[in-house]
Length: 121
Length: 121
Length: 121
Length: 121
Image (tube, rainbow over all chains, first blue to last red; front, side, top):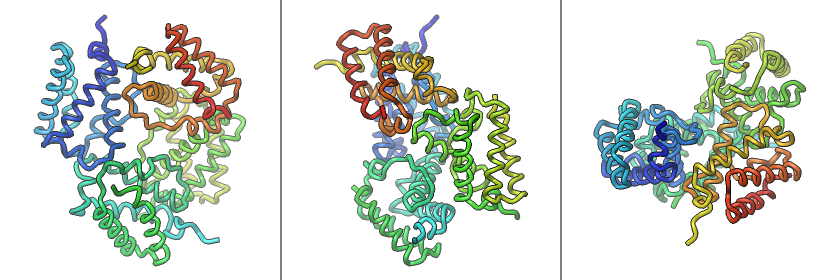
């Protein structure tokens, strides 16, 4: 049996580092930064942790995820095709930076692609 | 014994209407709007409800408030003296619009004033 | 247009009192008490507040309810037909004690009845 | 510099497995089982996850823990000296079963010992 994507990505710490780097790059991005601007540290930290929990849960790690589904969480944010394209670009770039292998990188991209319909408006 | 501020303001519905109007005005405000911009509807609705809960709790209504304290909730948002002055102006204007009486209006203002130190940076 | 059940029951305070009395009676009940036994005060207070929020929301008051749906919240608790019958009895007795009128009392009972399928196992 | 206890215990997965085994043993324990009895699956899963998050956070893993502090979470549960002694016994037995080394086992025990005052009544 093949290991879960969670395990093949390197487990919790690797996913937490991946999510942290993606969010930090998006936050500093000229186009995407508006989604993190003018928020308190507690909110920023909570939302990063929710993202980590979601990814751990979805890739097969032990995590009881009781947060919102993606459509509820993003409805009304006004996320565009261009925002999404930039975000996916950051995901790819961070995956490269962290040395994610082609097979796992492909699965990560396929996973994010499956969320697109629930997130953009 | 004097009634609680909660009761004298008209109870839950009056406080919910007050909070809703304050937040909607702040959201449309040129200076303050940035704190609500680019957020999803679920987050906006959750935070308005948290504000209602907090006010009901603090004025003496039956409400188990388990949200963040004001300092934790606002740390890092970069709220300035000018933001606060505008917010307090909106509070006063909505109180007037809703016919809050001078005694209760004074208590509301004193209450918000007591939060200032925890909220601005 | 007829007022919401929320308004006809007397609004937030009346519903909060109703929920509080129902829970306190259930908690002391020989049959039902097990669902509240050996829990901390914070958990008891949080769950009572969740019930109040749920009822305010469902009867038409202003309340953003972001808690679990009834089926998710109760799955695995092992609530039997007999438990439910006793609970409904307490609901009726508290409604009587608080002077809920027949029309509203009937609507409250119909409402609880609609939840039964999601709650018992 | 010495690695964090989190790392030395084996990271997230090891801590999640440790917490899961401890809770499952406590749940089946004649003395301690009452604290988990008559609860729904969602609540059991949520509380196990909170324990994992707390342990990951306290041992030095990346985790934004926004749950209750131990004293608030346990106040009113009626946890006795005997309950605590049994719980610590289970902690030690699970640590042994999972092959936690003496140094780390000692640190785990010291950590749990530091919580005792906040948890028993």
